[in-house]
Image (cartoon, rainbow, N blue to C red; front, top):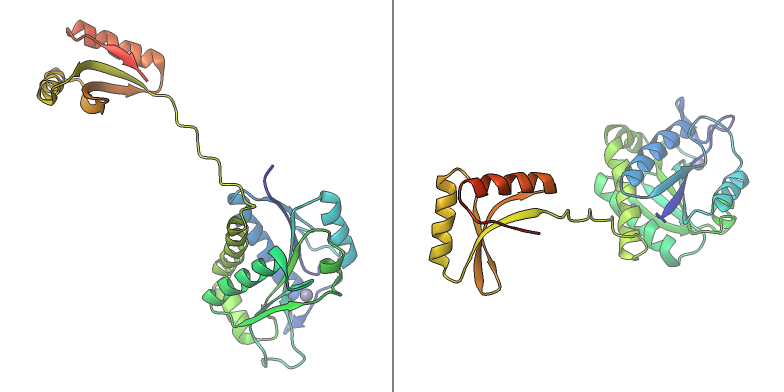
Length: 260
Ligand SMILES: [Zn+2]
């Protein structure tokens, strides 16, 4: 089973979140959450969303949604605001308490966001936030810059994709380091059919055979097998292709052996 995460885009619908000069937190969070989710999904995480459109959900409903889905992790994305405009800027992550995987992830996300240009305001414990308190899985709430900071907004708009990537990298690095993310399955090495045209103790003889094949227009290379040098003429994914090639070699007077 892939590692699963509920991505929660803050606010929505009748709740715009923080608003600054017509800019609404709920729009920024939705856009960023979807972008982060896309990257996580591409990296093998099973991604669920509390919302993918402009709808209202209470914080409690969000937690319940995650609990019912039984996801492994809950990541909420918000934008911050400060009573005075353009006074504070930077990223901040909130977690229930300063421990465990969520703490590692919150720190990692902040660090990644710092490389994009945000000031790192640190990780804070907020045990009373509903989405952190009511979720049964580890949860992180990222405040991706202040919506009433022109500096942060400028960064948010001009480096949007880098910001999404930074959050996703923070998530993925943390999960990989913790060993909870299974390595992506390496594609099974396909069995190749190879045609051996000679097995020699002496490398010179093998080289002579290789030349003879090449002179007749056949592919050929030498590889070492135990104490022998074997001359291989062609590798094929499909058995019938290998058999056809074998037939052509036989007609040209070569003795062949099909190996894998
Ligand atoms: Zn918010």
